[in-house]
Image (tube, rainbow, N blue to C red; front, side):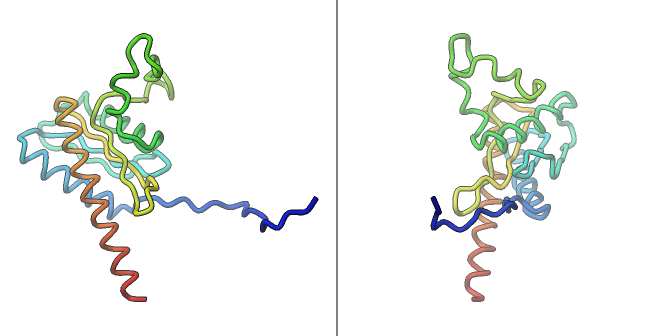
Length: 162
């Protein structure tokens, strides 16, 4: 039986953040962290969950460094904010015990936020840690939103040149 479908490619192209986009996100996170008066550890991961950029603001907790990195890892890999797991990780919850996956790297504390492209694809993620989960999430969202805004702006300029 033959198919009218063209053969699928043996190669995938996966969109991901550039270092310059990661720095845009980090700068926005730093600005928001300063505005709320908290020094943060800020990690940016690529769409494949690997660390792309990291900043430790003066005074940020040393013990929060791996937490920020793992929040970015989790948000990029699962493509949702780390705060999405809040109600599901307690005993009896649908995701109880998930924090033990990936060698204990899976984070269920607010502060990890995906960075999405214009088509909704995850390009990477921001992970922030040192404040409360709500503060970490607020700072991470500021970075993700600024990176997404700049990405849309860049794509709009590229289309305008056509």
